Image 1 (cartoon, helix red, strand yellow):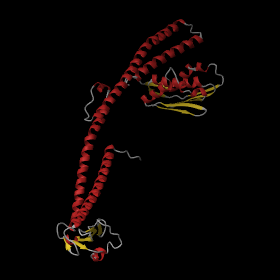
Image 2 (tube, helix red, strand yellow):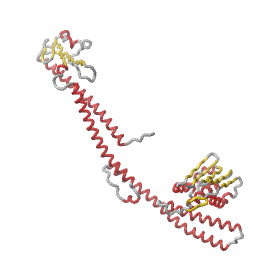
Image 3 (cartoon, one colour):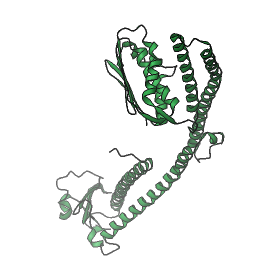
Image 4 (cartoon, one colour):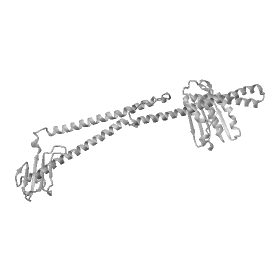
Length: 414
């Protein structure tokens, strides 16, 4: 399972790690400067003291020796294997480990005396002798750690407050975005404190306004087109009614042609109503009635038989069973018509199988190279895209499968 990262947690973790790293680094640098400063003070004190005292004597805790052999043994043994250069402070620290307080510190430096002779200046610091003064080493370490933890905690609190001041406007932007609707697009976006968030809100408003304008344009076109189509559709229907009164009922060809025109007019009328319904968000105006699925499929196939004219090498099989379902007759007819039409129209040779079992319809046909063109998947200029959209609105399951030799469309009405 992939863990989703939180931007707030990520920023907090990154800043805390960075802050701790900076604190540790500055602690090390500060400690180094502090120790180097103490060494510099000791070195300067040794050089200045030589002008007041010389010879083998002890003054101001410094020991002065005219030669190497006269340097105290407890100091000399620590620097026996080292070359002692002039005016350089040498130091040896004795401690139990790196983190513990030093037990003893030995200092040694070789300088020129005012009379021109070389003098060794040494000093031995026993830190245990000062343990009775002030705090113990452990208490000092505890104090240092406490101060570090307090500073880190204060820093983390400040960072948390800063992140909260940033994330609250972001959360407000998220809440405002979820509450957006077409009715609220005319209102100005609220102030989100930061310029970048305000610009993002304005950009979102512009994008949504552009999308809303495009949708309104499409819906207006659909309404106008559907309205204009109603007049010629009504004319066709009225003309069919007139032809029924005038034609010779004994002429089978005329009867079939008039019946086909009548069904085509009804299909166009239903398609117009479906387009209008799809352009509206509220689907309450659609009519649900009982539909005999097997009869509807057989009627649609009979109406489209003309698409097989001139095609000699096609074998068609239609298998249905009696089944009724409560659906939208118009939407059901549009989908079935498109699926069957595509199979009949684009099959050059081979077979077409139309199988209906209960509430499931499957149309399978032999695939040809012309079917590879996606633009050929059309019916009344709408085709399978309309079928997918209708299926999604009604909650029907529609699948399209392609193999090297076959093309099949399956829909389950619910």
